[in-house]
Length: 131
Image (cartoon, rainbow, N blue to C red; front, side, top):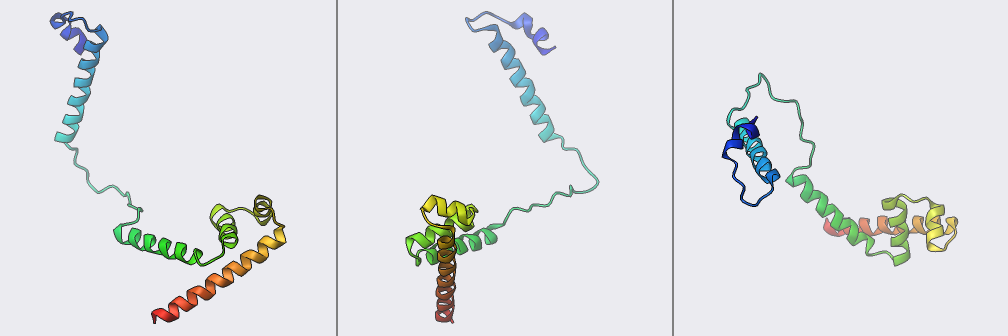
């Protein structure tokens, strides 16, 4: 309707007619948005939407924990670090990890066990030093 009402005002300025129609449509959309912001509809109660996103404190703690994990992983030899990354972070099986690293699945499991034992030992030493 708005295009039909505006047709008498249309003058050919070398632009496509679609530009004229698009400008009218864009103005109508802007009008609706402004109207929605100006006249909010009151409701009886608040929406039951709970924000489950972590807050600033949780994000800071998570970032700190990530730094601590990376520091702990840096204490391991490269192969053990790679095995833990593939097994724990990526979720590969021992067989898949062995295939990608050119090892046997048993060797991957043994190296993973040793890496986790070394991480436990390092973490305990760090906790004792902090006390």
